[in-house]
Amino acid sequence: MAEKKQWMPRWFYQLASPRWSYEIMGKLLPWFAVTALVLLVSGIVWALAFAPQDYQQGNSFRIIYIHVPSAILAQSCYMMMAVAGAIGLIWKMKVADMVAKSCAPIGATMAILALATGAIWGKPTWGSWWVWDARLTSMLILLFLYLGVIALNSAIESEATAAQATAVLSLVGLVNIPIIKYSVEWWNTLHQPATFTLTERPAMPAEMWVPLLIMVIGFYCFFAVSLMMRTRNEIVHRERRARWVRELIEKQ
Amino acid sequence: MSEMLTNEPVQSSEQSLPGLFVAVLKRDLLLSYRRRSDLVNPLIFFLMVATLFPLGVSPEPEFLAQLAPGVVWVAALLATLLSMDSMFKSDFEDGTLEQTLLSPQPLFIVVLAKVMAHWMLTGLPLALLAPLLGVMLFLPDGGMSGLMLSLLLGTPTLSLVGAIGAALTVGLRKGGVLISLLVLPLYIPVLIFGSSAVQAAVTGLPLDGYLALLGAMLALGFVMAPLAIGAALRISVSG
Image (tube, rainbow over all chains, first blue to last red):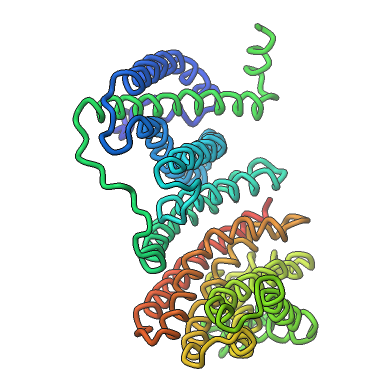
């Protein structure tokens, strides 16, 4: 074979094949699972037991160790969904479609988790479960965008059409997210002159932010694990007529 | 409508892009004009929603005046959404949409003309009707110009964004509720700046900033939305 210059490593091209992706994900899965477990357990123990108290909020601030990673993840998960959708739309990669489909429920869960932990933290700190604060509102709208994507995907019967339609919707959402974010921020400063702001936290000491960093990385690893599990599931489901899937199932 | 669907050579005036735009616009306006009740329904809905607020909340003039900018905008938004479902539906059902996608004419222009026709039949009448609602809800006189201007600039964006949802769901039997789920979150920026413009007009603050932002969103939607609508229509029709 004439050696053509390859711009991407070989494994990247192989990812386009459902079978290869299934196997590669199967190999990566235990590593990510172990890393996620170690990081999450050590991070949570450090955060809950050893990190110093906040001088204003006492112990209630510790919920940020769940709240912040889930909020970050909810946003980057949308990014991932839109990028995977674009790859599926442009290169007609089936696996990318499956990844995009698997992203939506995880992202929606993370958005709900961020909203719920925010509400639980808000009750003792601000005195109310919900405030029409810019950040809360834009997270709520992000959740709505996720729900729209999920609803559209489940409404269309043909899987290929559903994937393409969802990809278009998530790309439209991606263009809109910055607009929504800035308009909501501006709306808030217009309508509510600082009834509640996030209390100005002092620059965090290292004992506080290192566990937070560990938790964020741990959440990302957990996201990778659950995304790979969902995608593998999706691959087996959609390729159920392929011979390798039948052999795989017969072996078990 | 027949000009763009046949293989026969068309008149030279229709071959240019403006000609195509005008032809599609005329066709859609004519088709809607023949079903007049569909035209009036969103407007009646607009009036009814606005009537619900004094009944449901409070008939106090001072209170309603505070509420008015938001209520009129939300009602306009819902009325636009209500009419969205039928935008591509009849074309899809009788096969016109398929032929349009097959035709060599640029889809961008066709889609833009269809959205324009939709706006002329919903957004424009809503903007013209808005002062009536303003009076019903005791909106101060100073706010009327802001209300109409913001609706004139904002409703085309609503039509453009809503058309994406309509195009994505055109092949589905029950698209109506789904469109709202897909499109409402995307309407939020327009709602925010639209009702802020009215609020600013009421309090006598300068409007230019809000109108500029609404115009910027319209420009962005004008350039990007037809691409998304075209892609969505191709997906819906082929699927």
